[in-house]
Length: 341
Length: 132
Image (cartoon, rainbow over all chains, first blue to last red; front, side, top):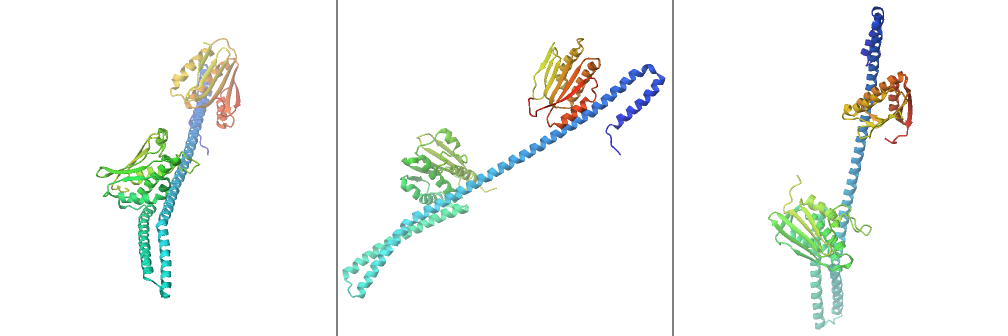
């Protein structure tokens, strides 16, 4: 059995042909006009069939085009997704690299007091050994013993002082490093935390002689993510050292904190370095934007700062700068970081 | 009126009817918003030309790459007008241009040729992605 879309038309034509025979006999004068009518109907039927095919072809083309569109759209989406993943991976590795720099800073900073303590202890041991020998030989004089006592007091003071210094440094670093690595939320005294972070940056700051002045209310307690704050500050400092004070340019930095409202912290980080053009200023937070490509710039430092301020601290960051007029970053964020939801 | 020239737009075809030379062409793509508004003047001009008694040979080049159903019906009407004058003895050649590999357009051409008995029908292959 076969299906025919145009069965009714064919049936009508068959009837018309049968009618034609009867008409031939009954009314031959009408025959030629009648044949024209039938021919017009035949033509119309063929045109109808043709139009159905044209229409089906157009539908098929439309459907192909839609599939192609859908395929390209999903390709583009997949490409975008993998780009985002790559970007996220680079941001993560940059964070790890700065954690590594922090650890190196810690090691360098602690080295000095520990080194002093070790050499003092060794000096004390030598002096004690000498004293024992003299005592065993029964030749220890009063004046000699008094000299030893002076040495012992001086060296133990130095050992104690330097070990305390090392212990303080470790406590500060430990907190900063733990916060950095864990990104835990806790309550923190901002002024003290800024100091802890700056200490870890001393190995970078000291050789170039750039100071960081801090002005922050001593009693300002935040309920926030101190590790994030520490990362932000160290990225800002490193950015200033790399760009504002490039090529040994002298100058200083300042961190100024105040409370424009009781619930909002305003932290300004300024430098009096070489500043930047408006073109660079406008792009400074873009990922991978760097003026130092190929010279160690990843273009991620300030992008990470921006992400952390906006994404984690739920705040905002702006930057003002002019060539040779220094640069000023202004961060506004809530004292109590709102919850994730 | 010795010619009718309508430049192609995104939705309407290019029409260049050189009546003096007997050479008629339609190019581009045809899916006009206003079928009557576009084809009305084309039909009028063509009807006027075909009604002239001079009776010279006619070449019609169908170079459309894409057309919708209304335009297909309009083409069939044009072809029937040409068939009528060809039947009366005027030499008419219709060239149906298809891009190479466009099999379905070729089949449509063969389909459209079915009702042409007096018009000489030719199929011509043009390079794909060529001039619109």
